[in-house]
Length: 142
Image (tube, rainbow, N blue to C red; front, side, top):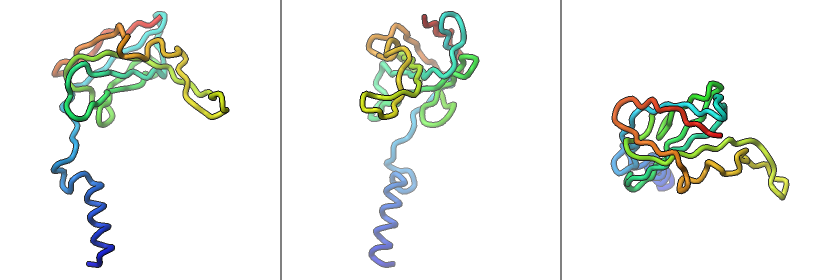
């Protein structure tokens, strides 16, 4: 094997996070989580829902998230679609992102609610995820 080929194999192996999975970062154990977001009593589509852990999750802090469909329903994703969230306590935030432009004319996503529900430190929405299925009460935003 040539030196350049050997270097390539080493790089590919390193990119695969530890050749065979040893020493890599693995996703935490999760439980299914689903819920609904209502704005002024009506289902809200396109809302980004983010769960911010209020417990020590270890070296990597996962932030489970999802987006509401036209019925205002969401399921959480941690490491892959529909995986839910690790059991524990969370502060929940909400953003309704739309396309816009910044002062330099660059395309950006803008929160329609201007951050009103986006700060986990000020969120009044707290939940605890348990082992097993977690069908949450609707989140009611005004």
